[in-house]
Image (cartoon, rainbow, N blue to C red):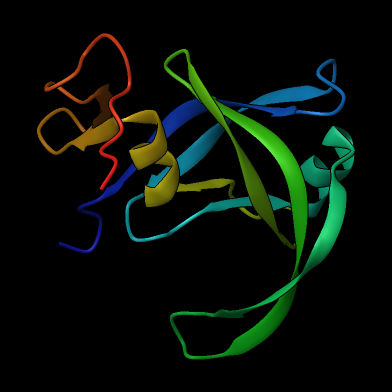
Length: 130
């Protein structure tokens, strides 16, 4: 169904350059999205650095140019890594995409609708290096 790979989870976002700047919010975990999307107000609150722009295609096929900000630590279930952030309009739902889940070795459990550690490596994230 439409909502298959989407769950809401508490996520901590922290500025890697200024670790005292962080927010903990309910984010949409969306396996259909790729990276990290944060609204302008949270980007400002975190004091992230703009590093460039990218073109984004939306579900309605509209293409827009959006700013990219560098250096947010995304923490879910005590696991964290550093990502770039796509900045959207203020009030947009924060989104954590598939790339983040893979880096942190987390999965969306379709039964419980929760984010869980990969059962194959429950204790530490496992990276497949090809």
